[in-house]
Image (cartoon, rainbow, N blue to C red; front, side):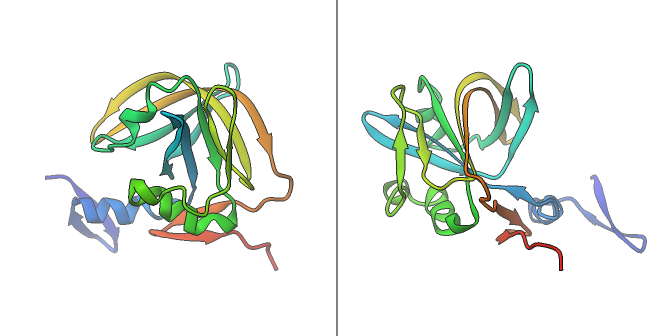
Length: 171
């Protein structure tokens, strides 16, 4: 069995809880990945967003294999990826929760190809699914970026140690 060195010569057996805590020491942004499906908004929250390439413009998000939302989003002609701002904590929780309540109190708009974008996000990307890779209990969705909009001065929403946080300016 593999172990994780926890300092001072101590190690613990790997477990999902231990790995979640270890991975949680790395702060990440929070995104909403959304599209119109059957004329209704459909989406999920993902904190595993990564810029991949500038040329071509590619990003990735990781989605749990057992997600019931990703199979609905996958065939969409275009996906909206909104990098959420500091004021979106409750919206991020809603997007990670019950499918029926995800868009309650969330202001959004859609482009002509069905990409759903969250109002007030730090950045809003429209993307097409380029590839999907299997990776353990997740899928890596590689997305080709088509358009970008940014909100000047918007502070990002950060996920760290299983909590939402915001960045503070240094004193």
